[in-house]
Length: 148
Length: 298
Image 1: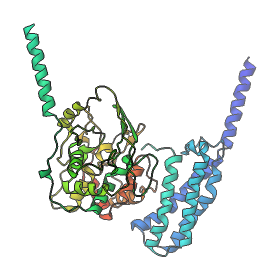
Image 2 (image 1 turned 180 degrees about the vertical axis):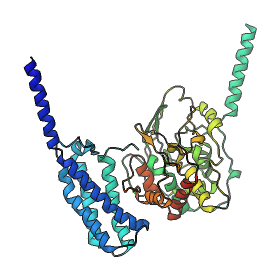
Image 3 (image 1 turned 90 degrees about the vertical axis):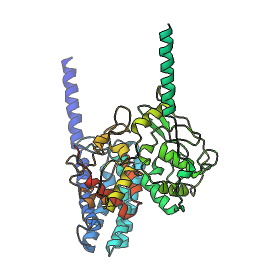
Image 4 (image 1 turned 180 degrees about the horizontal axis):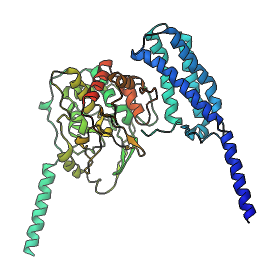
C-alpha cells in the first residue's frame, strides 16, 4: 500500500517538474509582452505629446511589435496554461482559432504601420491606431481580467 | 371590528394616495423648447451616452448601428431585456413623438404612461438638456430599422410591480447636479454635464444604496461590478483612484484605450472607451478635467 502511495507521490513530483520545465514559454511570452509594452510607451509618449516625434524611434518600436507578431503565436503551447502568474486565459487553448485570428489582426496592423513608414505625428497616429485596437481586441477575449 | 375596518380603510386610502403621488408623470408639449433639430449634435450625444453598447441588436457591430435590442441584463432583481429603440414603427420607437422620447429619457415614463425600470439609466439622463434630447431623437430617427419584437423582463417579486418604481423615483430621481463647479469654468461645466448626464458614468462607478439608487456621498468612488466578478474602479483623484493619472493620461485613455502603463482597457469599459473615442477632443478633455476636479474619495 505504502509503495503505491510513494509511487503516486513520485509520479506527481515528476509531472510537476515536467510542468515547470515546460513553462519556459510562459516566461518567454511575458518578456515579449513587456517589450511590446515598452514599444507602446515610445509610440504613446509621442502621441500624447510627452516626447517629440522621432521617426527612427517610432520605426524601432514598430519593428519590436513585428517581432511580437512573429513569435508570440508559438509561445502558447499545450501545457503552458498555468504557472508564473500567467494572465493568459483558458480561451487561448479552448478557442485557438479565435486567438490566432486576433494575433493575425495584430500582425496585419503592424505590417501596415511599417509599410506606411510614418514620417509625422499624424501619420504615426494613423498607423498606430489599428495596432492598439488589436492589442485591446486580443486582451479582451484571451487575457484574464485583472483586479486592481 | 369597526376599528379594524377603519384601520384597513385608512391603509387602503394611504396606499391609493401614495400611488397617486408617485404616478408616472411626464412633461407636456408646451414644456418643449423651440429648437431646430441638430442631427450631428444628436450623434455626439448618442456616443456620449453609449446607447449602442446596450441597445445594439445581438452580435451586431454595424455602422450605422442597428438598435434592435435584445441584450439580457442579469441583475439581482431579475433579468432585464433591453428594448428595440430603432425607428421601426411597430416594435421600435418609430411612432414616438419627440415629447414621448423626452419623457422616457427625462422622466422614465413610457408613451403609454408607465414607469420604466431604472435599469434604463434615466436617473442620469434626467440631467440632460431638453434641446439635446430633441437632437438625440432626430439622430435616432436616421438609423436603420430592426423589426424584432421586444422580449418581456423576467423579474422577481416585488420588483415585477411597476407601480413601486414611483416610490423609487421619489427617493432617487433628482435632476440636480452632483458636484459644484465654478460657474465661469466652461470646461468643467461641460465635463460635469457629460459625466453626470448623458455619459451616466455614475451608474457603474458609484455604489448603490439599499433602494438601488446611487449613493451620492460616494460619487465615482468605485463599486461592485454589476456584471459579476470584481470591482468597477474608483475614478476620483484619490490614491486609490486616478491620483497618478494626469488629465492628459485620462484624455489619452478615453481616446486610445491605453492606460498610463500602456496596458489596455478591459471588461465592460472597452465599449464605453470606444464610444468616448468618437467624441470631439474637447469633450474628452472636459471629462478628464472634471474627473481631476471632483473630491477625492477612498
